Image (cartoon, rainbow, N blue to C red; front, side, top):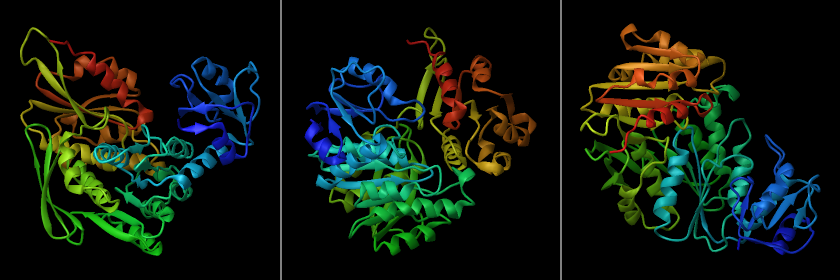
Length: 465
C-alpha cells in the first residue's frame, strides 16, 4: 500500500468521492498496474481524457481537477484544484514522513547512470527506492517521490533541467542528504548564456540540502569553482572526485579488461582502493567514484558497494555492447554493436569516442551519429568543431544523420565520410551497406533525432545461433 484516500486528502486538501487504497501511482493508462492511483496530468495530452481507460486497466482511483467528460460515476475520484500541485503536495507529505537517507543526482552527462548505479549497490544494503527511467523533470521528480514506500531506507532521485530555475524547486522538494553533480557541459546551451550559467543552475541541487548535507562534485571541471561556491554558501560538506590532486576520491589508473569491464585504482583520502565496474569507459569509473562517496556519506558500506559494482551492467542505449551474428551457420560471421543511442551532447559523444579508441581487435570502427539537440545558435559550429578532435582519428568511417550533423560530416576528411542522410529512417533502410564482418559499430545521438531507431534496425540483422 502506497496511499490511502485519507492520507491523500490530508496531503492535498482535495475531496474524494469515496474511500480507496492505492498500491502505486501512474500517469499513463497504458502501463498502469492494477491498484494504482491514476494521476491525470495535463502535459502533451490531457490525462482527464484517459481516466476511464485507467479504470478499465484496474486503477483504484483517479487524481483529477474536474469530472472527466466520459466518467461513468462509479469509481473513486480525488478532486483537487490542480493535479500538478496535488502531486507535489503528495511528494512533500511523503518526504516529511520518511526516514530514508536521500541522494539527488544531476549533471550534463552521467546522471541516469549514476542513479542506476546507486540503485543497484544500495538495494543490496537496504530497501531502496529510485526514480524510474529518466523521471527527472517537474512531474517526474514529484511522482517518484510520492511513490516512495514508507519503509524505504535509501532514496535516489535524478534531477534534470532544460531551462534556468528548474533545479532548485525540485531539490527543495526532495530535500536530499547528499547532492551529486556528475559533470557540466554544453547540453541545453540553447537556454543558457554559456557553460558557467549551466554550472550555476546545476549547483542549485545543493539548495535543497538540509543541515549537515554533503555536496559531491566533479573536481576536474573548468566550472568546479562555481559548484564549490554554491555548496559552501549552503554550509555543505564538500567531497570532490576525479583526477585532480585535491580530490577526496582521486582516480589514479584505469585498465580496460578483456571481459569488457573497467578496473580503476583510486585514492580515498590517501588510501589506495582497487575496484571494477562491468562497463567500459573512463566515465563509468568516474561515476562509480561519486557513487561510492555517496554511499559512504549516507551511512552505507562503501567497501561492499565497491565489490557489487562488478555485477552491474548498463541499460540499453547507454553503452551496451552486443554481438550481432550475421550468419548462424558461419562461425565468426559477426560484428559488435556499441549502443549508446539514448541521448547525446558533445561531452558524452567525446566519452563515447574514448571508449571506441580503447577497443582493439576490429577490422574497422564505424560510427553512426545523429544530431545533438538543444545547443542553441552555436549548434552548427559545435558539431563542426568536433570533427577536428584527435580522438576521432580512431574511427574508420562516419555515417551521419540530420542537418546539424551535416556540419560535422562536411568537416571530416573525405576518406572518413560514409553516408549522410536527412533522417534516421534513411540510414535505417541502408544498414546492410554500412556494416561488415569484423566491425565495431558505435551509435550515438540525441533522443529526438532517433538514433535508437538505427540500433533497432541493426539488431534485426542478428540471426540467432
